Image (cartoon, rainbow, N blue to C red):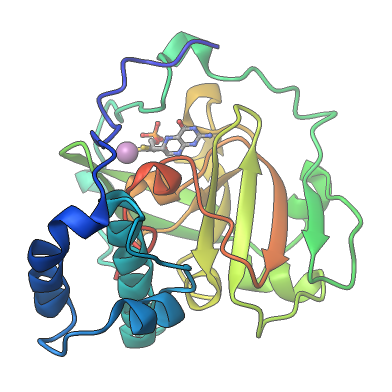
Length: 258
Ligand SMILES: Nc1nc2c(c(=O)[nH]1)N[C@H]1C(S)=C(S)[C@@H](COP(=O)(O)O)O[C@H]1N2
Ligand SMILES: [Mo]
């Protein structure tokens, strides 16, 4: 599969931290509510080991991770994304992926399996049939893509909270990660995974998810930007290590939500 031109990818150059320390300290001050954190403290808070000769890129990364923590602490698990009327649904709904639409993975639902691993007590994989036998929830919400477009769509499927309970997940773990059939991947903080509007979407409108919109399973997370809504999901795992994501690991803010 060939990637589209790298319009998503942030431009990064290797610049040494030692040459830019005054400027960075300023950014750091602004970001950290004017309490200048030492590199050592930032290292601790972000979980990154930072040194003077590290690249600026690495330091900004650490700041972003620190920022994620603060945002996660501020996250209100009861805060709902707005919902809309059926008459407001966007037709046709836009397609987006790191490849062109005709390259979307062609998955046979009858032999597709959802693998489950990590901090869960039941690691059996799931068929579509078993997922459809669980209670389903629907939503009409707005999908917001970082590339500057948004669209209202209708999705329904199994609330992720319910699924995590069904597999005996450790709900005190920090992250839930997702792997996709097209080498895309992403992850959520546990409070977002347990949010009532986070669903394992099987249907789009009144039908099974069409191929290009994530057949047979897409994680629909209306409290997050579009890139944290992985399509064509084939594996779910629970972890205390941040699994990152396809865009997240190229510099997009990992939290990217409310
Ligand atoms: N598997 C997979 N999931 C993905 C992507 C992708 O490239 N592959 N792109 C993400 C991005 S950036 C967006 S905006 C949405 C687009 O979903 P849509 O095609 O339903 O509009 O899917 C997200 N999930
Ligand atoms: Mo996106």
